[in-house]
Image (cartoon, rainbow over all chains, first blue to last red; front, side, top):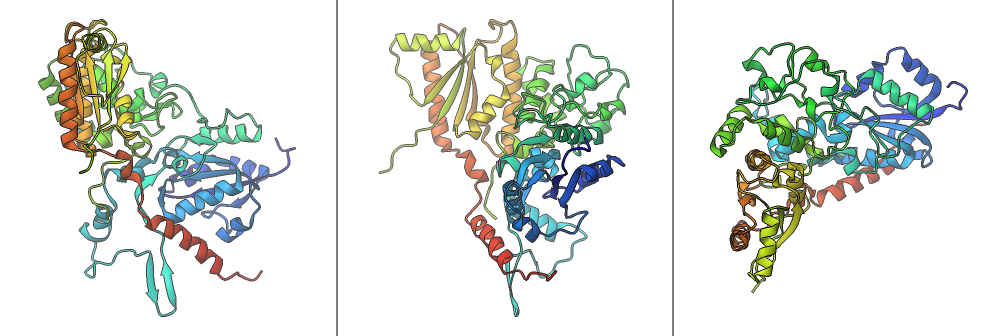
Length: 325
Length: 164
């Protein structure tokens, strides 16, 4: 691997928690191999390169850009477009860039409500003048600008074309290393592919599976699940059935249902729809009223339960916008 | 006077009962609303919730699922799964801000051409009352977005260079 000419690597962070940046470092000492193989030309969290530097680079001069985070503000959209223009290969790194993830869950509400919570309504917030971020503020020295906060969070590929996807919240260190190796050895799947497994978490899960028939859904705090049998059969909303493998079924291993952080498996276009299809099949009733009761009693938050990581990438993308804020 | 609202309805009809019913309605020259775009599926149980959500996402104003009566399914019990998926979808659609009545489940046997035609007419009339859905409008950002993007470019052009 080390005989190859040194490539250029960029990493960027948009609307995400920063966990993906940490995940890159979770490959431990292999980060030194990455540094030996690539010149890291832009990585705001770790090296001192400015946006100006990127703007001056020739188009397609960055070999690989690992972009994590969704597109929530105008600045992030600008950076996504800029890095797309400058990069040969753009990788949607992690769940936020791929499918919106937790920041994308805010698509269940509106900008107005997000601002009300963030700047006014939380008990620890003191904001008597009701100050909110403005895109323009006139000062004596000139006008100051802040990025525009969008009503709807978009995934990276809803903003610019993406070459590869690396799923996970965050991607597991081994999978990151697999992807880097695949890039270096030019052993990549066709463009547009997800770099990862093509099976579900259930396939990695060691629990015993029987026929799935349930009369009641439970939330995790309501029961202590049996450690050997399928969590779904015990009425817990385990998302393993729809979720791509790659984590080693970490959560079911410790008696906690899969929450779907590795995103939809191959062939699944809409994660939540797959969950709805599967869960409906399991309900042990043919009586419409009883079915409704089982669903409404057991699943108080269908949007959050089925789309915890993928609301922005689902067919509906967001909840209805009541009034534009 | 403005034109009446012509809703886009996607109707998934099962091969064995409801599609045959629509055939019967056709050969019997029964008139019914032209706004339902009929898609033949092998069974109402073949209608993945993703089909319904995709239809709404792509601009449908209503989605109709029609299949064999409970107990009559060609595949024994798949239409019972449809009952459950329908309940699950209605619950989910409500939470997303889509009127649950934009999704309807109808049972029509192969002999019920007249009933299917009437059901489609009724559903079209009900969706017309609800009005257009225009779902993709929900993620269209307003004009401020273009301006904000232009401002970033302008601001970067003005930024002082740090001498090396």
